[in-house]
Length: 546
Image 1 (cartoon, one colour):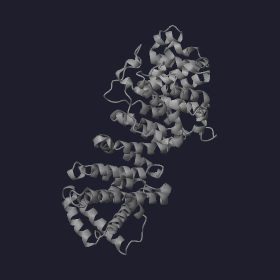
Image 2 (cartoon, helix red, strand yellow; image 1 turned 90 degrees about the horizontal axis):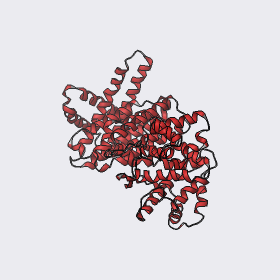
Image 3 (cartoon, rainbow, N blue to C red; image 1 turned 60 degrees about the vertical axis):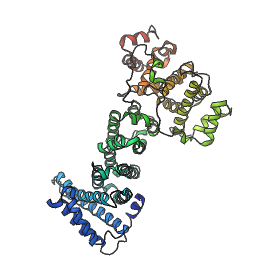
Image 4 (cartoon, rainbow, N blue to C red; image 1 turned 135 degrees about the horizontal axis):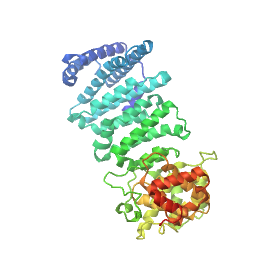
């Protein structure tokens, strides 16, 4: 329905006189809507107006209704453009008055759409109502995309933003007829916003971000919709946002407009971290998969989320026994199909290697399977590295549990799983190893079996490294996530504290810790933040207990 609306938005061979009829009817409706006699929620005005629509023959066929909505959308948008041009020609004009002029027609049009959706078909016939809503949303999307293409830098977001936000609010009012179609209504809006994602309509991006972060929309999608059915759709919209930001963030090309968008994104994530942390927990993998490796704070916000029913143990507690925590053997929920990116033959060989350590060529061919080009900075398939790391880790945990044990520095060793990780640490070049270690660090979150296993793995790779370069890179991956503003993921903190505190790792003896005075100072200040001044001093001098 929506796609037919979009395609019909660009068909202009209207029957003679239809435009004039639509213009007359729209003007009539706007006057009725704003009149004192309109009645509560414009119901009286609506009854009278439906009669006029019948008289004019607009309701005869689906095609005429569609054309009527398209013409009304175009006219409302045109009025908005004229009002905004007025402001450009007359800089002293009051912007609030100009906006009110635009809203005068737009709000009336939205109320008409909402009333038609509510009253179309029988009271219990939800299909007719949703079909009409999808059709209208499709028409508005089609008009927007065409306008965006034609006007380019002259494109104005205001009329479309107003139509979508007012329609969203109208259709989420606490009325029985609307509650019965609420999930389908939200699905229609999610599809609309996905079609208008920033990569498709960059000129609409600010309005788009405002729409997807509106408190009513977030609450309906993440809290009110039963069985968390709104979660995957909302996750897709955030992925759309991250994908648009990614190339700018990767190249650190933050012009003023992009800085505003980035700050807006951080604010949305802070709201989600505070109000819906479980949502970020469940979709952390899908989000981190599309966020560039250099976006440390953005990723930390997502990885710091933990379920509200959990009390996080203080990572700075002396002698904290992580393996004794009750939550540490519980697997987190991951709602992303992360193995979907693995080519079937690769997955088959991987499963075979984990079970039987064959084919023997699997390890030697692993690097070339992960590499996609020779261009520095783009050599590797990051999604495949992320999937490989998490899949091997989850299989390793299951393997250890099947043997009646739990992950620890001694139980994770000497297995096909660790062979793969050690091979990657040694065989990959600096770029590949950085991506591999980042994929591990992305699993260092709140207390759960994945955090525990990957924390042990990171420390084991450090202890067993055959060159100081690997140890330096492990330190870099952990440290760069700790020197940005808070919040810091719990699992990241406990891993780094263990690394610098436990004498077994001989952390303070490494050359890279002392390679320059400013680096040494940085390590000292991080150690003091993590452990307190006295304990940090003892550890750095080699007198601290493990």
